[in-house]
Structures are given as C-alpha cells and as structure tokens.
Image (cartoon, rainbow, N blue to C red; front, side, top):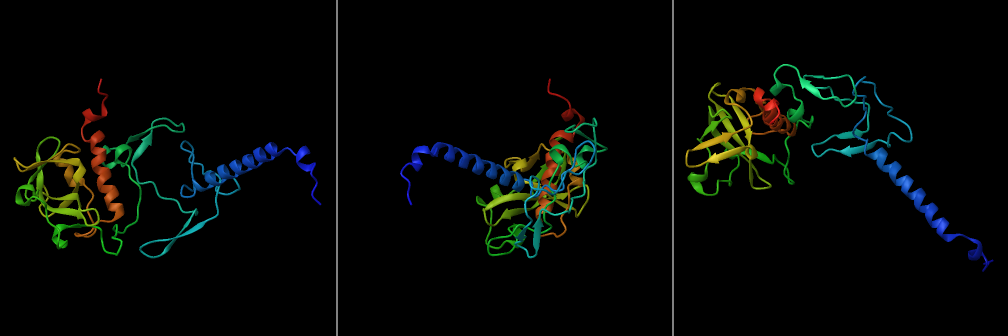
Length: 259
C-alpha cells in the first residue's frame, strides 16, 4: 500500500548521488579494463617484469575479432610481440630514453620506430589492393599531363646527391592520391624502393625530386617489398619509419641541439 509519508523521510538527492557514484565507478572500471585490452602482457621498463594479466581491475573478457582478410583474433591473449629494435636504455629506471646501438637509421627507435602490423595490403571496400603502382592501375593518370608527371625525374637526397630516378607512382585508388614514388636506385641497378609522397618536394622546372629526410647513400637500406606491385600494411609502417628516422639519425649533426 502506498505510504504518502515515504518521500518525506526518504532522501532522494542522496539516492541520486549514490547511483551516480556507482555508475561513474563502473564506467571507470570498464574503461580501465578495455583500454588495456591490446597491451597485454605489459612489462616494467627497467626490470622487464610482466604486470598482472588477470583480475577484476586488470583485464577485460577476451573478445573475438573477425579479420577482414579471414581468420579471427582474440584480445587480450598471452601472445607478446618480439622487440625488433636495436638500442640500449641510458639508465636503469622506468621511462629512461633509448639510445641506438650501431647505425641509428637501422635501430628502429625514436622517429624510426614502427608498429608491427598485418602482412596484408590495405584493401578497397569491394576488395583488391588499395595502393598500387600506375602500371597496374588502368584508368588512373596524372592530372596536368607530362609536365606534372614525376616519372623520370632525378631523386636527390638531403645532401643533394642523386639517389636514382622515379620509375613509377603508387596511387591510392580509394582517395585518388599519390601515396608513394617508386625510385630506381642508381647504386644498385634493378633495385626499387618506395618514397612517401609527403616527404618530397617536386621541382618541375629542374625535373628533380628533393628529399630532406635521408642522404642519397641511405636509400639503399630502405625496406623493400615482398611483391613488386603491392605493399602490405607492415611494409608501409617500415618504409615510413625509415624515412622518419632520418630526420634525427641521417647525420650526426641532427642529433645535436639547435642551440
């Protein structure tokens, strides 16, 4: 039976506040578990000790992801990526910076670091590789005709020495953009590497493609592709990271402070 005095003795604001606190705590707990889903197992920077991978406050229930190229992936899981970099920690404390061991261009740290991605090409919505060279992209051409076509231009490194010639253009068929230039290296006849388009300046009047990221001699170590007419997601990461590393490691002077 309804008691009209109930609301006179019941503290509604306290109920609302309590409900909000419970909801907010549950939300934080949910987000804290979810944001670590793909980071397991985590490890301490200094000791390498793995952090707990189970428990209410640490791990969400595993989810099954259906991959676009077939197969499934369960996250979180006990798998761990093998470190691929060549560097040493400056001091044995958590968060200490890494210093490259040997050639900084090949150390895969700092601006040259990359994520290990799938060994498959990025695909169009209806299937097929998304980024391909013009030689296998019928219906695509360079706007502006021969004057705007970089094919045949000389590629110059940061030292303004010639690294090779542009042999082809890799286009994004979904975005209608030039993603990479393909460079036929002068130092190794027959070897071709990709050059990210955002890292070049095309001088149409001089018929030159200028690159500030790396020296002409360093083009020889640009990661190569497994197949001549397609690039995987992992290869895109490695290629871009190599040029990115050049902005810091290409010359000894770039490691020094500006002042």
